[in-house]
Length: 158
Image (cartoon, rainbow, N blue to C red):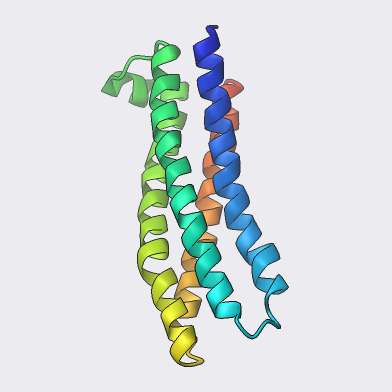
């Protein structure tokens, strides 16, 4: 194994940990911690906006390091590999779920999340807040499944 490959895997794991850690931090630590603060909506908005930038940076690095990891492993980028080998099938599932996660993240981050904060600033409405919460939960579940598949793939599959 080359040093560059190990660095690429390390960066991939760190970015995945950052992505998942942020998704756990906001609902489990930040939101309960600011619940009684009069400016909680502003704090949530500023924190979410800051995490959004670094989160999407981490996702971009995940894509780059994932492609590099694929390359360094010498895996064939063919339909046959993705459909006929157990390794390829697991990787296919991981990649499909990753694309779904990106779509859900985009909807959450750039629509429901921001609109729900606007809604909370103007009224006590809950409709968009609930949609933001559920897309966030779905996103976290997808990320955890993807991480599990990554561990499974790196350990030789199921």
